[in-house]
Length: 259
Image 1: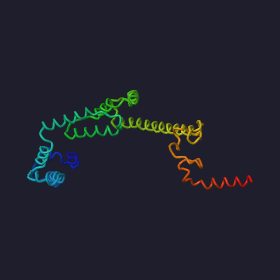
Image 2: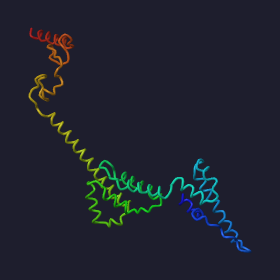
Image 3: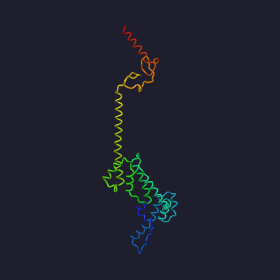
Image 4: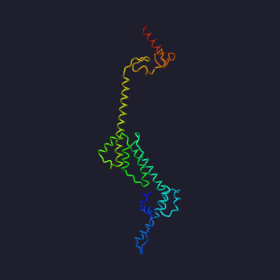
């Protein structure tokens, strides 16, 4: 809100509640215009403050006569006393110092969390330089970033590096690692597939169940299934064999051929 008022040259009216100097005798047109504009600033500032709050808050500040009274009322209500403000700042600084980056989190997510805390501190008017954020990031990163940090120490003055530059450098490390991991997974999949193909070509001893030699007996698909004594196939018994007629016809044809 302060920035918004400053953009319209209204903050001085809110902060200092300065009175507009009276007009001199026989004022010029320019002086009259300037005097009128200065007097209008208070009304403009009040309008800005009124329009920026909800109806509930508006009813609490409508009785205030000047922009400064409105601002002081809002500060007292929502920022509290200086003691309360100090405690809130200390709690936020403690929260900032306790932050550590987890192995499972990305650098962008971690830095965003730090900046959110810092912005809350700055809202209380507390000075919090960017180089303090940079130092915090550097000393709380997981071990996997050590090589990159050493490289940055050799190539740059870390006391002058910006938060954005540091984030970009560390994100590049993450991206390269992600590409390597993806290639490793692809390689492992290819090896696994090759091993499966190789195992299919291996000749095993004849299976005790189905007599085939392309698998081990313990892996036999027919193991435990009933076997037909008519057609020697698995999955049914001789009573229900659908190949019984074929076997009979084949036997009859053989007999006719012999005679």
